[in-house]
Amino acid sequence: MNDICVYNSDRIQRLWCNCLSLKRQGERTFFYFEIEAEVSAFSAKVYDFIEKDELETLQKEIALLYKQEKSEMAFTSFQKAVRVELKYELGGRVSQRFYIREYKTFNYLEINDSFDQTFLPELEERISDILINANQYDDYVSGAYGNLEKCPLIHFSNFRKYLDSDSFSFEFKYIGNAFKVLMNSGAYVEELLQFERRLERLLGDEISVCTFAPLGEFFLLEIVRENGFSVKGSFSDTLFPQSHLSFQENVNMEIIEDMMNEIKQCCM
Image (cartoon, rainbow, N blue to C red; front, side, top):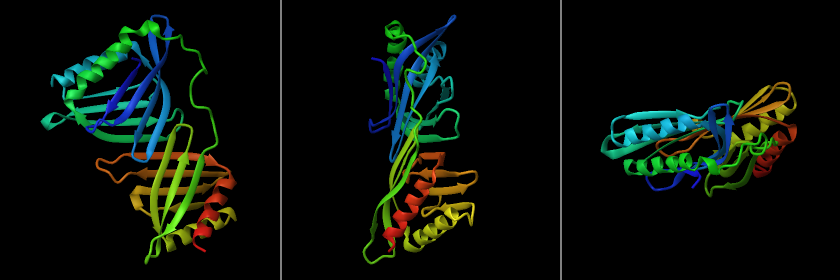
C-alpha cells in the first residue's frame, strides 16, 4: 500500500496522498507524493516532498491524538503544498482542515470536514506501511512528475431561465494547473446584463476592473486589465463547515470575450 487516504464521517475521501518515489539527500530521506483532494465542486492535485523524519513524527502525533494525550496537531509538507490540521472534539469527533496550495502562487483550496476518532488507527497504519516499505519506491527523477503548465480554462455555460422568474441558473467551470471548479450557480438577469456591459467596457479599455458577485461571499469573480488580463476567483460551498477555493490566473482576451458572448447570448 503506497497511499494515505483521509475520509470524512461518511467515509468519503477528502484527501489522498500517493507515494511516487524516494529522494535521498545525504542522511536525509524524502518521500515524493502526488496529493489530491476533493470536496463539493472543488478538486485539487499538487506534488510535494515529505521528509521521512516528519512522516514518523506525524505517525506518532496521530497515535497521541487517538489516545487523547494530545487535543490537536498540525502538519505541513516540505514545500507547503499541503497543511493538515486535526483537532479532537467532544464525543470522539475529529475536525479536520486541509490547505492545498499551488506552488509559487497564492492559489489555494481550504477543506473543512470531520471524521470519527476510530479512523485514526487506520490512518496511522497507512503511514506505517509507507515507512516500512520505503525501499520499494523508485528513486526520484526531477521533472518526471508534476502538473504541466497549461492555459487556464474559465467558462460559463448552460444558462437556463427559471420559469416565472427574472433569474438564470448556469454552470461555471475553472480548470487550472492545480485546481478545478465545476459548480452550479445563479444570478438575476440584471446582474448578468451589468456584468456583460462591464466586460464590454473592460475590453474597450474604458475601465480596469470588472466584478461579478451574484452570490456575495459564495461566488466572486474579478477581472482586471493591467498589462494584460487577469481573473481572480473566490468561491465557497454552501455546506457547513464551509470549504473555499481562491485563485488568480493570467488569461488571454479570448477568455474574456467568451464570457461576454455567453452572457449576451443567454440574455437576448
